[in-house]
Image 1 (cartoon, one colour):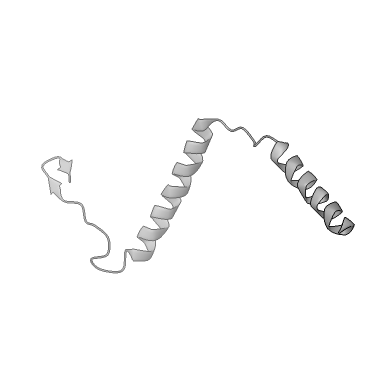
Image 2 (cartoon, rainbow, N blue to C red):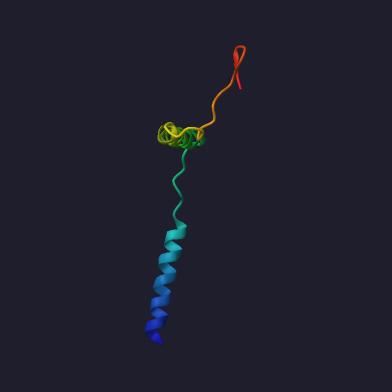
Amino acid sequence: MNKFLSYGVFAFTVLLSSCDSQPKQEPLADVIDRGLKASTEQALLMAKDLESQEGRLPKARKTGNKRL
């Protein structure tokens, strides 16, 4: 019983100390830039993988000077 109590106190102390630390603060612009960079890389990789498969990627239509 005493062993379980000491393990419980130890686990509680570890959890409490890990919850006490503050998460790293990062500017919102950096978070957005990192997310946009990752999504751009993923989209380019997907396009490269699918470009040889006909009909898998949407094709742009040109109407006058505008692309739809």
